[in-house]
Image (cartoon, rainbow, N blue to C red):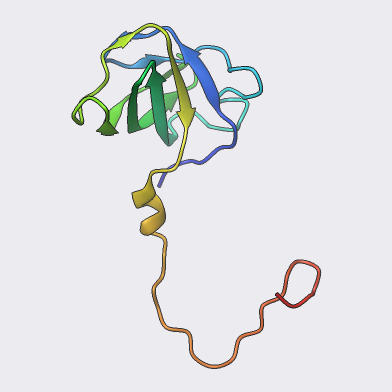
Length: 121
């Protein structure tokens, strides 16, 4: 299971295809730790550098300030991006994660839906 967190987007000066060193948060966003991501948590990420992108699964190392990379999709024919030192990393949800949680069962009988305030939906 992956860890989700809101508004996480950081700079990285990492070069090459290895582990990402996570830098400071982009203005208006927060770091992995600030968002509650814990050491050893698995996350889904997107890396963007210029017109190139990579979506993957990573493990956060809070003491080192790094994240491993396992590519799921990329603009580089499915390979890890060879970073040049000016990328941004943000947490995201991979579509397959959502598809795995959907239940396509049949509901029978009558159902009444209400909002949080007791009103009918």
